[in-house]
Length: 380
Image 1 (cartoon, rainbow, N blue to C red):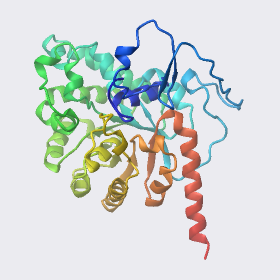
Image 2 (tube, rainbow, N blue to C red):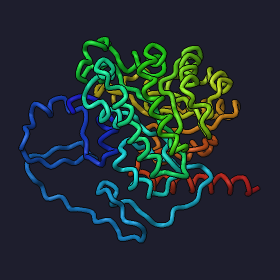
Image 3 (cartoon, rainbow, N blue to C red):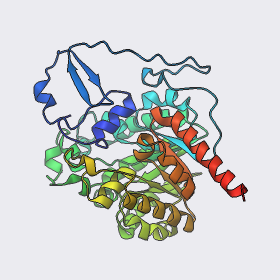
Image 4 (spheres, rainbow, N blue to C red):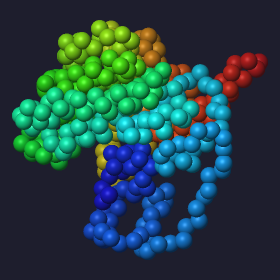
């Protein structure tokens, strides 16, 4: 991509699909031509003209079930260490659910709705589908994707994050310019929880789909993204209650901790029935440091390990436990910086959700951190 940083959607989606991705090139789409042959080195962010001889690293043979997806073929399948901290995975593609479920994970900490919703929308804005009377078909297609993932992870928790498209992404759909405002900074604009309070008819489509999918897969839970204040969450919670979801067995309502105000409001969220808080370190970093995560110019400033960001994450963990709710993290940081897990374990986080390609390293780092804590407590 010409623009965007390491935590832009292009980078996150490509990583989940196992596709090499280079972002923030400024002019690559003008220089490169369709049909041309290049060699891409994603780790260094380099693109070379022509086919270069790059030595392939053959994965070491290991026992276990063969994975179905080539993008996961190199992951280790040896016996994984047992940890008290649950390890979840970030997932968005139903087609990869079976392969990812074969990894040593306890469930899905972040089920991104965007992949399934884009497929269910068939390229059209959701309000355009409602105008055409196709809302029911959209719900049915969304249910299929939810069930596929819910079945693959049967016995493990699957936390579905409701739709969090920004206005610039919605505008790219058919009819999008009719319904979406043109925002200067959509990253902190009309999105997430507040959007549900303004457009409950669209939110209801997702709630209907989740209710139908949970009839077979009660391990599916709902997580509300980009919650700014208690009053908007309360309005959103009423729509969830009206859908009948809280009456279904084992239902849990979660909120994402992406806005720094969440530390103040966690007690109010817990009092309103929230069972879990999941830290989205990408947006939290963006808002703590005032850095647009889509800006390649500001990329050197974007650091989830900045002391101010770490202090905010620790505060969320402690406030969650004080309010009696579980706390997780599903941002990019644990996948990119495996040593990040040790801090999280030391603060007592309940679960960590990483990308599929980071599962093996993350579980090892969690186990090592827990062992060090146990030894430190036992030694005089």
